Structure formats: structure tokens, C-alpha cells
Amino acid sequence: MTPSPSDPVALTRALVRCPSVTPADAGALDVLVGALEPLGFTCHRLRFDEDGTPPIDNLYARLGGAGPNLCFAGHTDVVPPGDPRDWTADPFAGDIIDGKLHGRGTSDMKAAIAAFVAAAARRIAAKGAPAGSISLLITGDEEGPAINGTRKVLDWLVEKGETLDACVVGEPTNPNYLGEMIKVGRRGSITGHLTVHGTQGHVAYPHLADNPLPRLVRMLAALTAEPLDQGNAHFQPSTLAITTIDVGNPADNVIPAKGTASFNIRFNDEHTSDRLKDWIKRTCDTVGGPYDLKFRVSGESFLTPPGALSALVADAVERVTGHRPELSTTGGTSDARFIKAHCPVVEFGIVGQTMHKVDEHVAVADVERLTDIYEAVIDGFFAPTGGTAA
Image 1 (cartoon, rainbow, N blue to C red):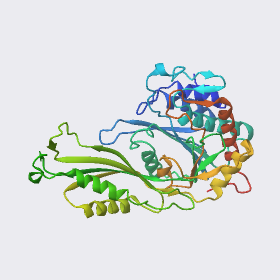
Image 2 (image 1 turned 45 degrees about the horizontal axis):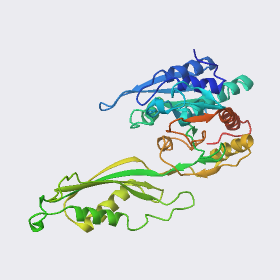
Image 3 (image 1 turned 135 degrees about the horizontal axis):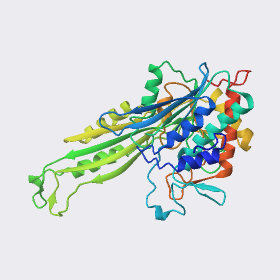
Image 4 (image 1 turned 180 degrees about the vertical axis):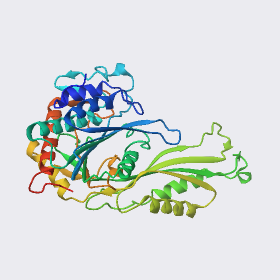
């Protein structure tokens, strides 16, 4: 049975009890539909499957048919819990222990989803539906390849003529305490896979071989020789991290035929992935010799310049917590990288200290306060004096 939509703690527990490890839904969207439809939301279950990848269940729910449309975006999928015996409590039981709600996905990010649903329910009960629309875009493919999730739902919205005017993503943005940080952008991410080719041979006769490893080392040294940039007012400096170097050579008297390495660049808005690809290729070309490069771009950097939306959320946070949050672009990527092309977007959620860890948990009090913050955001957005923070 779906709990009361105005009870964020009970709703979080119900979601945690759905073991929705990517790509499984495990009933999580059923819980949300059961909470939203009685409030008047029209719910669209959307399943996408591309290129043989696992099918993903998504949800778009909307209350109202007019603009402006305030959207909350999030994901019900979670990472695997590892060995359940390492946990204090069953990772999918949603137990409350000493004021903390335990379970995989509590922090990232089922508590935030429940808090927004509860905030909408309380707003509707207190003041009725707003003169506009409230919507939720919920995916089951954020922790996975992100192919059949938010991007596909956004494409579906465009096809249906749906417009988002502003969006709050419920990622766990606070490093230490609720009210500490709002994300107004994210760095981009590009991963490079470099293979340097040579000719295998005996180490005693190196002139008869072509050792690729010195070239591989020089290429990596050139890529990491200088900082990519110094950062700017909104972003920390871009970084390049070598993540693996592999030869696969078990013999110490054989020169290998190839060597491989992988690296990741987290880049700010002074770069694009295409310009970084060109720079990487030029840098490797200065060393010379045969090599292959493959790239995977997880997302471009983006920034929602501080303005009406970030001020609206910051004001709500400060009103509830007493803290004025920092506007930040730190951390990894999120589905906000897709939403930013459709409307202004910021991220604010629960404390993220335990996300993806054994004994992931959130403070019950924080779930309630996050609900209060989201309700204040809804009230401010639809304020008669022009909240509408788009």
C-alpha cells in the first residue's frame, strides 16, 4: 500500500523497499504513481529501449495544463548495495535507527523524490493547485548508461509540446549539512582510451622490435605536463586523471606489441569536448608513432548563471535552515546536463555523505526539512507577485 503522499518519511521507506538497482524498477514507479494520481497528477509511464540496451521505465507526471511549469527531476534507480551482511540493517528494508533512515538510495536520491511529492501534497492541501503546473520527471537510468532515461523523456516532452519553465533536480548536493550547497552547473566529463602500437620482440634485440611503451609514457607525460586552466569565477580548474595503464605482458624478456591507458578529464566551461579531443590528438601526434584513440563523452560542462531560480531556491533554503547556501559547480555529472538545454535548472537535495556507501542513510529530520524547503520553492515560484523563477 502506498503511504500518504504528504508523509515524506513513509514515502521514502516505501521507495527504499523497492530494490531498484539499475535497470530494474522493482515497483518504485508504482509507488510514485500511487501517491501522485490521488493528488490530481496525470502520470505517463514511459519505457525506452535503444540499441539492445536494457529497457528503462520512466515517469512524467504533471498537475495542471497551463504554464509556468515547475519541474522536479530525479531518479529512482540505485547502485548495487554490495554484500548485505556488511550493512547494519537490510539495505532494502528502510529501517529507522537512532533518527536515521537507512537503505540503499536514501541519500541518492529517494528521500528527495519523496520530499518533493510531500511538498506538492501539502501545498495542494493548504492552498489548492497552483495557477500553473507542477511536474515530475523521474528516470530509472541515471546510475546506468543514461541512454533510455532523462534524455528520452525530454525528447518525448518536445514531441508532445510539453514545456518546462524551470527545474529543480534533487541530487544530494550538500556535503556536510542541509542548506550548505546548491549546484548551478556541472563540469563536463570526457574519457579517453589510448592504445599505442609497436612490434613485439626479444628484449636482448631491441633494434629488431619497436617498443610502444616509451611513446605511451611520453604521451601521458605530455598530457599531464601543464594545468588545463586556472578555473574561473564559477568553476574550479579542469583536471586530467590517468585511471589505468595496461600492458598485459607476463614475460620480462619480451617487448610488448602494444600498451594501453585510460584517462578522464573533468572540464569547466572554458572547454568543450570537441576542443579537448583535438588537443589530445595534437599532443599525442607530437610524440609520433602509431596509436588509436577512443573517446566517451558523458556530458558537456554547463552553468545556470545565478539569477531568479537560484535565488528562489537559496531563499527557501535559508528560510528553513538558517543557512545561505553556496552556489557551486563541484562534483560529478547529473541529469541536469540534459535538462539545461530545455530550461533553467539547479540542483538541491539531501546531505550526500553516505551516498553509494555501505549503511547509506539520511537523517529523518532532514527529510522533513527538505520537504519544507521544496514547499517554499513551490510557493515562491507561483507567488502572485511574480515568483516564476524562470
